[in-house]
Length: 181
Image (cartoon, rainbow, N blue to C red; front, side, top):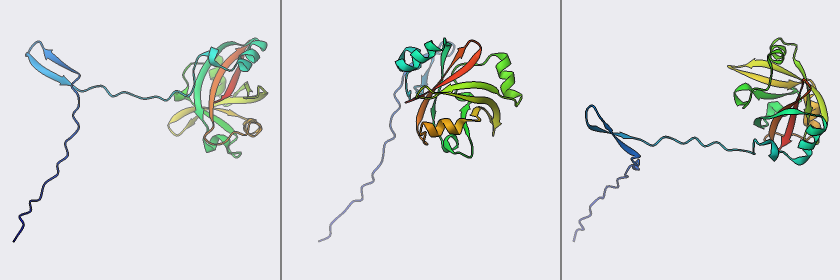
């Protein structure tokens, strides 16, 4: 006795895209279907509100009579940020959320001289550094240089640590705050 076996074909259906809306074109009275817009997901590391900074940091900024405190960016540290041979913290210009330099400061960062700044580390120690703007590959990057290795080693910064970087002014001097997240 022979068995009659049939081979079944398995087909996969494509997922259907829900129709968000049907728009009628007035001139031709024909329906136009639109696809839903793609949503961009951005992971927010921490709040950009000054009030959400740790109270110790806010108090230190107040002690220094700091003004114009601005959240600049969240930064995941890369090998180049913690490698002693590089001695720099890179801040890609396209990642910075707010304009934090005036025209004279911008000129200093471009001229190769650099701008003297002070950095408050997560332990609120002050470090004198220099801010310069370099073209790296196809983008412009601000770099905190000179004493960066000292900041990185004293705070035991490692690859993949995450920082919030803030700026503020004391009189006309630029300060940065590194808040470890």
